[in-house]
Length: 227
Image (cartoon, helix red, strand yellow):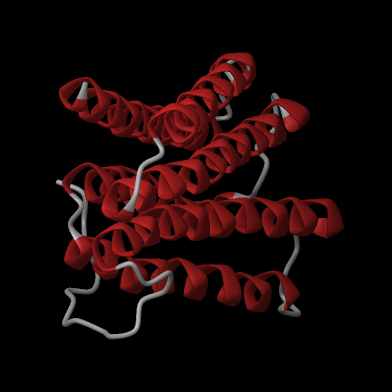
């Protein structure tokens, strides 16, 4: 019985890991659609909405079943509670990737943002995808140190989001109000995606320490790059 119980916990964590990879891939493809003004790819990302909802319902059901039947305690209870929270973060990450794709489809065949801003959004996309992948790995490995390193990379995303408003508010901005609004919305989608990835990783620290928030800091390498 105990073996079966822990197998169910392992399956729950594996489900979260798979979903983290799915939402990372969704944001990666949404970014490609943005950079290449690819309406067909954008539609493919949007079409994953139903599958995303099913994954959310199934994961929540799995977690609630463990709570109801197994009555977990201590670390096992924290795993289940963290999983329930993580399901919400992953769902929002997927929805934000869909928002990026919807922006592409809405303006297709035109580009959503001017070329001058593309390097900024390429970097935001890179950070977002990296954070999603690493957050999933932190959940799988219960590596609290890895989880805490994500916050410095999220700070890079916050800086990109914050400084965008300087760029679009500058007197030499020549691309009109619509482009400025689209750029601000896209930047917000990426920034929120990163926030949810960090929240997902934070659940790892809760599982390991029992504390809901990080209370200390660790040395981190900034400017992480995807291999």
